[in-house]
Image (cartoon, rainbow, N blue to C red; front, side):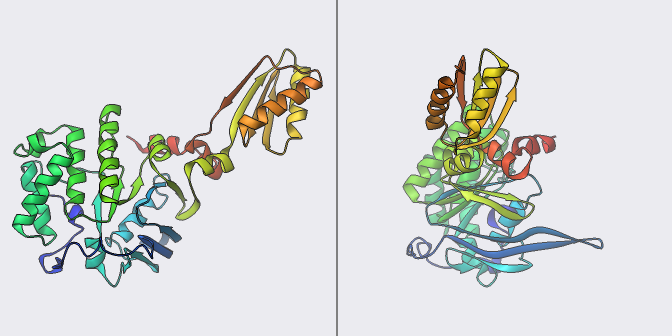
Length: 352
C-alpha cells in the first residue's frame, strides 16, 4: 500500500474517534480556506518560491479544478493542504481544522488520490481496502463492511479476490478512488486521476466519481491536464501560475471574460474585409481584430449577439460577408490569454 494514501500516519498518529463527526459539521465555513499560503525551498544558495501567498476558499460540496503548468505550484499547494508539507508562512484550514495545529483532524477529513497507483501490486483488492480502513483507525468489522460497500459502488466486487497487478488501468484507478473514500471523508483530492487512460475508461471513471459525489456530498478538488474535464466537470476553475492564483471563476465566466468567442468572416475582396474590420473595431464587445487579405478574424465577448450586429452594419456599408463562423473559447484559450502560453503545450512538453 502506498504511504501517500494514508498521508504518512504512524500508528501513534492514528485518530481514534467517531467517524461521523466530520460529516455532521455545519455549512457555516468553507471546506478549504487558505490565507497567504506560502512555501519556499532552499536550492543551494538560491531560494525557490514555489507558492507565493495563495488565498482561496472552497465551499462544502463544490467540485473545483486547479489548473496550471508543471512547476506552477499546484502540487506544492496540495501537499501543504494534505499536511505533507509545512507552509513557510500563511495559514490554511480544512473542514475547520488548522493544517498545522490539528493535523490528525485534517487527515481524517480528507482523502487523497495521487498520480501513481496506491495499492500494492501483490495484494488482493479487498484486502487493500480493509487494511486502509485499519490504518485510519476503523475496526476490522467496520473496515470489512466499508470495503464491500466500495467494491459494489465502484463495480469492483467481482475483482475483490484478485491481485492488484492483474487489474486494468481503469480498474486500478477505481480502486485508488475507493482507497481514498474508505473513511468517508468530506473532502477528496484527485491529482491527475485519469492520466494515461483511454477515453472510454476516463468517461467510466468520471461516471463513478460524479455518482459518488451526488450520493455522499463530497467536496472534490481536481488537478488535470485534460482541459475538457475541468471545463465539463468543475463548477469552478482556479488557475495557478508561478505560485500565485491568477484566475478563479466558473469555466463559462473565464472563457467569456478572458478569452471570448472567435469570429471568422470572409469577404469577396480585401476592401470589403477592411470595411468590416473598421465596423468591428467600433463595437464595444470586440476585443481584437485582425485582417488577412479577405479574411477578418475577431475576438469578441457575446459572439452570438455580436455577429448579427456586425453583419448588418458591414452590409449597410457595402461589405457583405460570404461566410461567417463562431468558435467557442476553451480553457486553453483562457490560459493563453492569462500567461501568454498554452497549458496544453506546457503539459505535452513534460509528458515524456
